[in-house]
Amino acid sequence: MANSNKTRYTDNHVTSETAPRNIAVILAGGHGRRFSKTDIPKQFHELNGKPILIYTLEHFERNDKIDAIVIACLESWISELERLLKKFKISKVEGIVRGGVNYWLSTHNVLKHIKKHDSGNPIVLIHDGVRPLIDAQTIDRNIEAVRKYGSCITCTPAIETYANKKNDGKLTIPKRDDLLIVRAPQSFYLNEIWAVYEKARSENHDRFIDCCSMMNHYGMNLHTIMGSSENIKITYPMDFLVFKAIEEARKDDDSLTSDLQHDSF
Image (cartoon, rainbow, N blue to C red; front, side):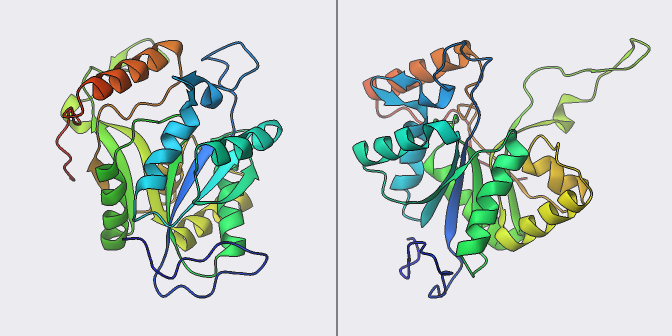
């Protein structure tokens, strides 16, 4: 279960925790122009009257190992997000911060907020607001892996051939068995990832595509687990159709479970 000494953020640091808390960092700071040309950011597009972002948040809200949620959101949509949190009874959100111009800066803004308000060293599970098909087992195993190994990167196996095209036009094709698809959550102890963020900032290196890339660049050993192939990121309209199909299939048959055995390696 979540830590019993749970305390909401105030203007002061959290000091009453007897064990590190587990905090979901949800990134919803982008617009998603590849998804839609409308003025509605993709995380606020709805399926059956519920925004994608709320589907994502509900998984962390329901998980009793998650103590708190902090969200990076488009500044102009923060008030709408606050309204939605009340409407859908999402009660674990302890902070909403302004999203940055990219993934790296949005994550930095959230970590900075947590660092300011929590004097402990919580586990932070960094997850995309547009990955609404996350499952409880993946969340649980991220927490367990960080406690045991210090980090957790959620992956799935490569199921197609990938090629690296050289400047001369030639291809190098790595063995599929050597490849992983990196997804989310990507989880760490706050102090460890914050220290690497500060090092990257001091070197003006702020273009990492995700936390896994940054932590790997700076030499951190990264533990991986296998997640579900359903845990897709909604980037294009086709992804939304996949999300819709899976949600509807689950609703019609609640015995449906993830199509992948969760293994670590």
